[in-house]
Amino acid sequence: MRERSEVASSVRLIASTIRRIVGMPDYATFVEHMKRRHPQCAVPSEREFFDQYVTARYSGGPTRCC
Image 1 (cartoon, rainbow, N blue to C red):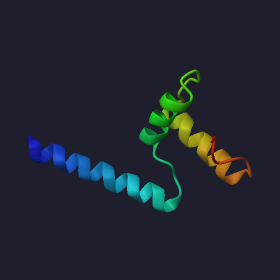
Image 2 (spheres, rainbow, N blue to C red):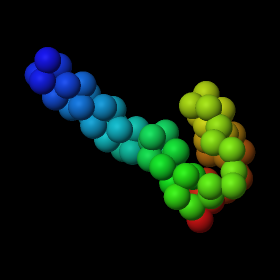
Image 3 (tube, rainbow, N blue to C red):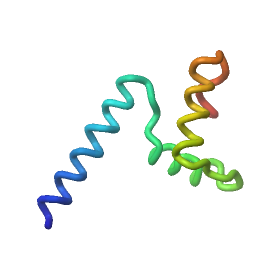
């Protein structure tokens, strides 16, 4: 059981690293940021997050909130 957990953790880390390399922010990190810095705001779903990212990235809008 522990080995599965370690493999799953490694896969998440690799996926997160690849997203950062290509410029896509990590959703889990974003959720933590929103909870810490913007608790009054609703957290978008992962799909909404991705759509907002793509729109901001390719439409010339801001790519960061802070």
